[in-house]
Length: 274
Image 1 (spheres, one colour):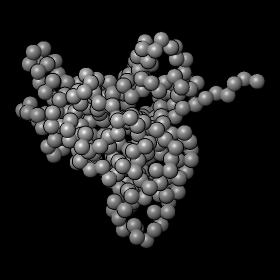
Image 2 (tube, one colour):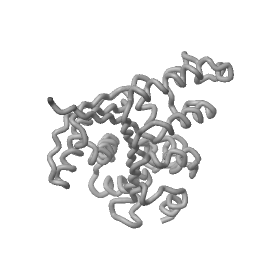
Image 3 (spheres, rainbow, N blue to C red):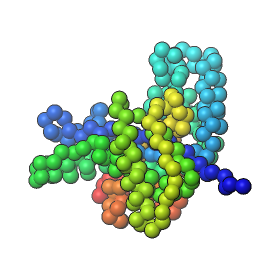
Image 4 (spheres, rainbow, N blue to C red):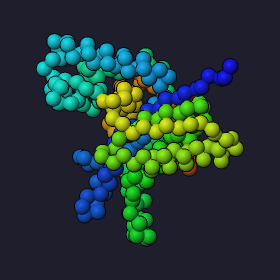
């Protein structure tokens, strides 16, 4: 009898933006319309079908609840909560119910974070000395490579659903970034990975797992952007690794948060005062 094929399901999204400068070349990181950080996250979900069913059931229940029927984001024509959960757009009471449900999911989350202020200063120096410009897609692709480095050898078939970035699909670039992650793993550990990898750029309204990683990213983003950990703390054990790549106070490759180094607001405040 042939061995059972093992599957892994990953769901990828981003938080923040990649706006660094105004039209005159001035750094506007942290100003309205330009976040302080940019992050890419991946959620490993053990049972995507069950997660889909539970999120759809919650949405159906909320859609028929008289308390929420007049909320703008709940109207089908708004194309927001009525078709997909999105932490930024969802009403606070609805968001609370989604977070409560997500605590019960069997998932593991990994996030890589860049400080846009650090990247902007480096970009200005490189432009001045070398004439090279900051490439937004290169930043995104680098974080994809980092988050997947140790995730691509654990099953026979790896399915990766990635939230589309605007109108550009960029499947070839994503494939290259993930292939590089696989090569980096093999180079470091001298282990050959024979996993078959399927990459699916898609929309959160079509794949419930993308709604999950959106919420988990939003919770971490609140910690970094607003010093607010009220959404992060109930989910903290689901985050297997948070890589703060520009916090070089202790290690040149950044600060890694997990079970042995718990992410706290005090640690983040210390990093930003360096």
